[in-house]
Structures are given as C-alpha cells and as structure tokens.
Length: 592
Image 1 (cartoon, rainbow, N blue to C red):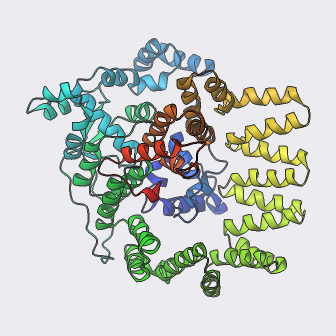
Image 2 (cartoon, rainbow, N blue to C red):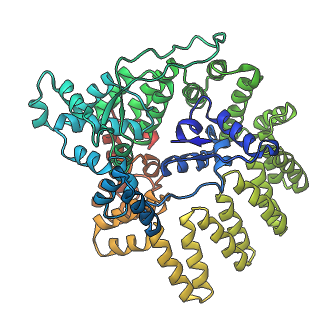
Image 3 (cartoon, rainbow, N blue to C red):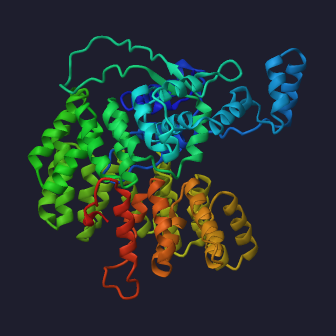
C-alpha cells in the first residue's frame, strides 16, 4: 500500500484516526500478510503527529503516534555514490530526463531536480511583487494549517499587506489576474509554482444529517502551491507572522472548519488574540468540533457557565457519531468542572465528581482518584487505582504508577511500564525515569535512560548526559557527547558563548536552531537572561519568538511584579511586546 504524502491520510481531522486504525489492523492481521505499507511524510508532520498533547487539551493523533512509533526512516537529501552510479547507467541507456537531471544536479540532489525544484525556487525568488505576494500568502496558509486547495478570493485579499508601500501604489487593476497567469506557467513542462486545481467531489453514501452546522460551499476557483515551494517556504518563513490582511482574508473567505480552527490556533500561538477569537467563532459556526470544545472550556473557565458549556459539548458530539460517544458531553462537562474545582481549592467537590466518573467507567478518573489517595498517604489504594487506569490504557495512570514504583525502588517494573508509555508516543517517559534513577543514586541506569531519550529525539537530554559524565570525571566522553549534541541541534553552549561575547544576533540564531530541532529550552533561557540583564535586547528576541508561533514561551516567563527593583523594566518590556503583537487592541493584562 502506497501512501504518497501520508499527512493527507493520517492527518485528516475527520477520518485520519480511522484510517490509522485500519492500517494498524492490516499490519497486525496475520491472516492477511505479507503486507508492506509505505508512505512519505515530511518531518514537520511527523513531529506534529508524535508530539504529546498539552495536558487538558484534545489528543487528535493518538493512533497515528502509536502507528509511527519506531517505524520512520529518514530519507537522505541527495543520492549517494551507488545511487548516482545506478542513475548514470540508466541515463546512458537512454533515459533522457534522468540524464538532464544528472547534468544539472552536481550535488546529488537528483530527486529535487526531477521535481523542478531549482527552477521553482528561481521563479519564487525572481517573481514580480504581485506574484511573490501571492506565493508568500499561499506558503503561510499551508504552513499554518490550511488545506491543499486555496481559494483565489482568499489569496487575492490575503496578499495585500505583503506588498511594500511602493509596490502597492504601482498595482494595476488587473494585477491579480496577471500574477496568477505568471505563476501558472510550468517549469520543465509539468510543475507550476501555483496552479489552478479541480478538487474531486466526495463520493460517500448518503447519511442522515447529524447537525445544523453549515456545510462549506464551493469557494470558486482554487489553486494549489507546488510541493517543493511549500517545503522551502516552511523553512524560509518559519519565524515570520502573516500580516493583518492574511487573517482578515481567512476570516472573510475560508469556510472549511478545520482550516479556520487551525488558523485560530496559529493566531493564538502568535498572540494575535483578537483574530484567534474571531476565527474560533467562525470555525464553530461552520461545524468545527475542536472549536466548539475550546469555546465550551472558555465558557467554564472564564464565565463559569456550566450549562452553556454543556450545550456546546453536545453540539460538538452531535457533529459526529453520537452512538460512539454515549454520555460523552456529560463526561466532558464534568471532567472540566472537576479540574476547575481542583484549581480553586474545592477538593471535596472535585473528588466527588471523579468518583462518579470512575463508577461510570471513564478510565481517566482512576488516575485522579489515585492521586487523591497518594496525597492522603494511602499508597496501597493509590497503586490500586493507578493500576486500574494503566491496565485500561490511560498513559497518565501509567506514569503515576511509574513514579510510585520508582519511589518504592521497584525499578524493574517501573522500566517495563516506561517502555509501554514510550511505545504509545510519550518518549519523555525515558527522561522522567532517568531522573528517578539519578535521585536514587543509580547514575549508570540514569545515563542509559537519558541516552534512550536522546535516541528517541529529545535533544534536551544531551545536557544531562554531559552533566553526569562530568560528575563522574569522564571528561573525554562528556566532550564527545557535547560535540555530538551541537551537531544534533542542542546549541545551548554556543548560544551562551555568543551572548557573553556580545554577539546577540548569533546567540539568537543558536537559540532558534535549537527550536528548529525540537527544543525551546535554550530560547527560554536566553530570553529570561536578557529580561534580567539586558532589556534592550530582550524585546526584539521576544518579538521574534511571538512571530515564530512561540507566544507561550514569552507568556510563561516569570519575572516578578512591576515593583521588583532588581528588574524594573522586565515586565514593561513583556507588556509592550505582547500588546504590540495583537493588531486590533491591547490584550487583557491577565493574559500576560
């Protein structure tokens, strides 16, 4: 089975988890083998699908995370010597297309050349201002979660703020038509930078209506961005935030609920709070279950409107197969209410809700009940409830059980549960067990599990490996690991060296290199340091972080109140940066 661009299957918000479950069943059904399922997936999507959900937030890719665990292979950027020799033999045997590609691709990047990559990149870099504005708007739309087919009306309106003032003043009445025509010209006879597309109509059996949510209507002409330009643009524009015209065009022209919800989340990540608010409501109007659930939580947490929240939960469930979610709206409302009651200190009322949910068979309640028993010193009861949740498949209960076992020095069983947690996608379990080994004085096994975490992709744990080897006096191995860590993107040390030397631009680059490799810890450390020691350079770094979609890093920096005499300007810098980010008005001070 060949899944080209597997994100279009596994990542589909409506049926992605069902497709993944079907693939998993196909692979594990011994009566249907041998079976090979081969697919391609960009690293950005692989990271998105394997990342753990934020506590309390939906987990839309749990089955995908389980399917991908231990089953991904990195594809090299270029042909190696053996592949080049084989390609050359085919070219000499008469494959003229391959011969042309080999003549142009002196660095071995033959596949990219065959896909028209060099010429597509040249067209992008040398495009007229209107064509470049359309391409940048299309790139931003795709990298922030809009689906493949981009409406012409959306692209045209979104492009406006991508122009400089001079270029905007020189636009003609037919600028958009001319730009679309320019971008439709193909390279090498096949790929075009931005081509007209004709989506295939869905062919599904008729089914009774599940809700009154609006159905997206035809958006008029739609266009598709060349795959290579999308991939290049994701890298080149990853730290840039789209301008106001982009968000306005999305709110005005986009109708697909997933597109709107993804953009609402992207706007929030970039602290464009007003746009996030309006896009989220727009998504809910068009039937987004994710948007409805987020709005329901806002009703509970911000307004204390339990009844209104449950109405929204029921609307969300009504958009799907309600027979598969019997009791789910009531559960969501009660679970959120219990969490909020815990936060306000009303522990007795929260415990009563968790007990009720456990009796009704909702497995996530077992972990909460176990935590209450553990807090009250009833460790045997806590372990019993943790095991109930763990054996039912709740990863939170598994982790609580690991912590309890490690405290009682039952490390063998703790390690077995840790492997089970990691197998379903929570690779941070390796780090958590490593710290427990270290606390128990077992540095040998601590290093083993920090190494497992590194091998699984947690480059933050390089620092712990270096630290433990230095602690044991093994300077040579510590230096070897440090060099390996820099090559892997763990750039904390060179970042600090550059910062101490006054090279702030280089320090910024090292911090964002670490972000590109999956860790925000160096960036957080650098921003915290500047807010305390160099507020003049803290603001620009905070703005870069926000525009790159890392507003939560800025929001999460704890500095102290405005009266802090040691850092009098730190909070003022944060407030100014966060206020500037939202283009409509100043956000609520409580948010920052």
